[in-house]
Length: 177
Image 1 (cartoon, helix red, strand yellow):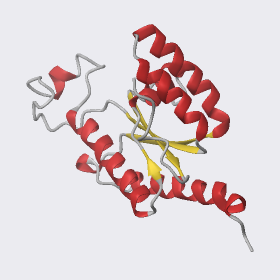
Image 2 (cartoon, one colour; image 1 turned 180 degrees about the vertical axis):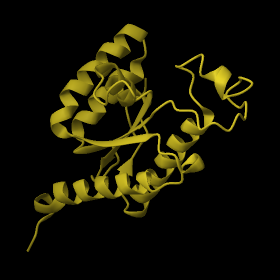
Image 3 (tube, rainbow, N blue to C red; image 1 turned 120 degrees about the vertical axis):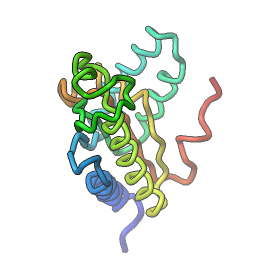
Image 4 (tube, helix red, strand yellow; image 1 turned 90 degrees about the horizontal axis):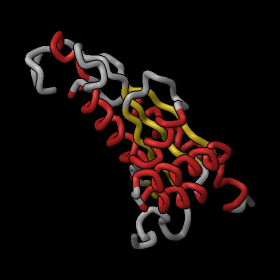
């Protein structure tokens, strides 16, 4: 007989991997891949949590500190990032007349890069929902990973999806700020 505690970690790792694949296979604008994916593990969380607390104090944003405590109680977290790489549609949705104008401002994202990231996140959290795993999209953890440069300079915008399999979701009934 396998007991829950004997399989939980392996099952959550497999779910994180399935979420990563769901994010990878999500549609991308013009079929161009500008989404970066990774899975953070428990050994990564103390460093990320510490940086989240630092950011929360520096920016006077208490939700960073709350989320920093939250991620210390999970096993895995999907990390999704976006590269800034215009797909040359000259659509103007970024606020510039065309991609050539936008490219003068290298830190301004292409709207399609952002859309691709959002669709990838939607695919990942849908997979988590299909498998009944608690999850929450976190800007705070992504910001910490960005400041720590854990994915490299190309990762312009990073969001995270921590997952949990407990009797009560740690991501929703959290401390009031």
